[in-house]
Length: 141
Image (cartoon, rainbow, N blue to C red; front, side, top):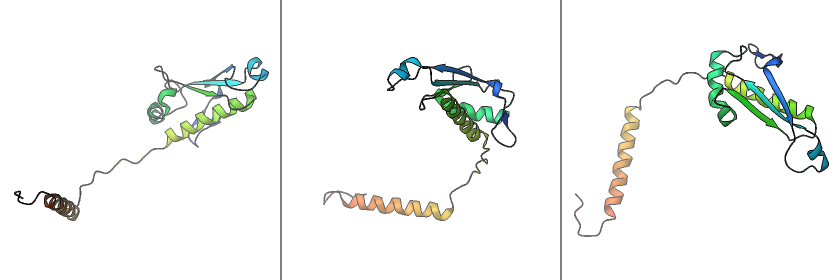
């Protein structure tokens, strides 16, 4: 089990790993050994996640999620499969922790009478400054 929050834990069987060859420099090692990891996690059909986390994951995942609701994370920074696998899982856990945070609902507020007055006074002052820039002899009204 992978602990996300005290109330949410993922079963490791829900994660699918595929080992692929990494791109970039590395000499023979990069050409011969499949050290890069592609992690796939179907968050839409995961029994471990509550509904509000699923909804948040839609937004947080962005272009890392497929149309079917599968998150794809590729890790290739390290030279070993184990470290790349650990990094991919860590990045998924970070995303899930972000999605698990419940933000308080925004309270609608109205501007105060004083702030409205200040805004209108500053607009009037600015209009007067601009009106004074006109050529002499032109009508100010």
